[in-house]
Amino acid sequence: MIDKIILGIESSCDETSASVVRNGREVLSNVISSQVDLHQKYGGVVPEIASRKHVELVVPVINQALEEAGITPDAIDAVGVTYGPGLVGALLVGLSAAKAMAFAWDKPLVGVHHIEGHIAANYIQHKELEPPFVCLVASGGHSHIVYVGDYDRFEILGRTRDDAAGEAFDKVARAVGLGYPGGPLIDKSAREGNPKAIDFPRVHFEKGCFDFSFSGIKTAVLNYLNSTEQKGEKYKVEDVCASFQSAVVDVLVTNLIAAAKKVKSPKVALAGGVAANSLLRNELMERAAKDGLEVFYPSPILCTDNAAMIACAAYYEFERGNVSDLYLNAIPGLKLGERR
Ligand code: KG4
Ligand code: ZN
Image (tube, rainbow, N blue to C red; front, top):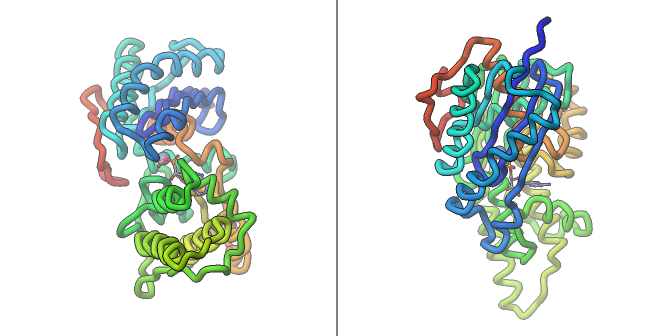
């Protein structure tokens, strides 16, 4: 096999990232410049600040990725880039850089769907993993259960009807005064708390429906905090975190396993920022084992936004001849599988 080298670029939210990946699964470099510190004081990502920072960082990050991989642009076979979904101003920076490089170096351009990238992170982590499988993609902007029929075939089996799982983590963390981003902070605090202390709601829809709803649990947490304070009592942050996390994870795992059984998939995977959650991983391992399902998830660094996952997804698109032209535009609300 002749080696295929892909340069991946990701800038859909608040991480500027570039990566060089060989043959889809071998990461030669994965440079991630996070803007978390910059957005922390606002309690969330400020789109305009994110775009400006991407402009400053995108070229140095790409140069560093090439340098760390020990290659020059002539060794690259294609440039892969996230073109949606995400913040339009942020997406445009990575996309414009990718188009400029593809044009200047005379290399093909491959547009990648951000969620497809998150799913592909599993291929980097697990060299033996191949589709089909069912994947839960849970991040700050998305909560989807996806049937991955092939490297470029995706079918949504369930989705959130309101907040994304990561969004709920971030909002609850802010309400209990933990800061931003909330997921990792709740994960840590919950280890010291009692998951059975407070009975937060777990929303399930009719049988055979794998959708989620997280706005109710977020409101229930806020109501609990307010009513406790009004009674002049103190709540234990660790118990709130543990009980909230356990309710969210319960619903995520229940729906993922039910969806996998429905489509008779023996393999389930996690992806996206929330896939870094320790309870989610442990609970899925435990419950999936009872049904004989094999479980896959990426290492935490490959769960949150990074360009290696984009380069990996681009490799498989490139192999299938799914190449974009230089008119490719950023699509903030891009649907999974839309262009196919
Ligand atoms: O995939 P990602 O980096 O960016 C998006 O595409 O949104 O996901 C970020 C989200 C944030 O909401 C963050 O709070 C959540 O993932 N997250 C976690 C954990 N680590 C990150 N949620 C729960 N537990 C974690 N350990
Ligand atoms: Zn993401």
